Length: 463
Image (cartoon, rainbow, N blue to C red; front, side, top):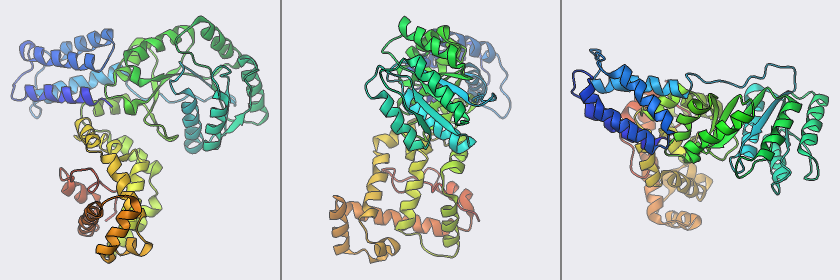
């Protein structure tokens, strides 16, 4: 996300290095570059105009602090204005009401409402310990009700059955009664979408809203539609008292125009962004952290939060103890670390949040098929016997051929993995007693090509 914008802004900052002061002349070109970068990112034109005006007003004539270069001073101004335009701070769900708290999801067809309903249910169950019920009022799209039932089963939420023959309003009423009977904490109502905004749709969802009185009315929108996302959100906001926006498919959007436009155009905060198809791929939207990612400064706080939620800390501690005792890092350990990393969004997901490694670095890794490389490595390890995984030294010529044949790859691929495991083992041995800090410092800028062999193990180590 934001690869294009991040790359352009980095280039702009480089041009300003060496200037003693930010003036009208030397900032004009920089602002033109920022403006073009925003337009290329598909940010809505009124938002671009307002943003550039505010940056110019703050930046021109600003004395550069002794310890900062003009480029850094401009980055500070741009960062502050990015945060301001996206909403200052994360706005969480407000469920402070007599249960069941109703969350109503609205949006166009294909925006990802049903998947978002499942993601929200999982988040509320796991992180907030809420009992959640799901109901579908979509009687128009074939198999929509069945899809939500499947999603509910996957996240362990209670599903309220409905049929395509029922009226959407009757479905919502019955679900609310059922939620009250079962003392559910939260009821998530998934409504029908259309291919475009129409009066019939708005009337129907307006009736449902008036009847079930949701505490949260969230507009779910496909982030890849750019500024159209903001315009559609405004149309829904005019018809419904929205409380927030969920931006989906953000992981597939290199531009990020919707994230920068929605708050300004609608006045409604983005509460969550969907960063993948998996049901745990829903992140709270933090404008300050997102601004950091856009400017290539990373999002370490989100990375730490993800590690706390998704990493198996018991396994991480076992590995740390094992290495501290001088035992070697084998293929079982390597495989476990790769699987943990995939839980946190894979290689590009991790790098996107590390300072100085977002944007271009993520794109570069994708070009090198870094994510596929991790999958290939896991496949090779799966083709080994338990003894070979525990004792890599056993793997000689005949075993290499068998392993390669077992996973449909070449002996060269097995050789490359063996070499990477040896390098990783040496590094682990060297730094196991020095903690993660030394390891990260040593690995900075030394990632081998292909994205497979030099990632940081998410579990980390204690000294």
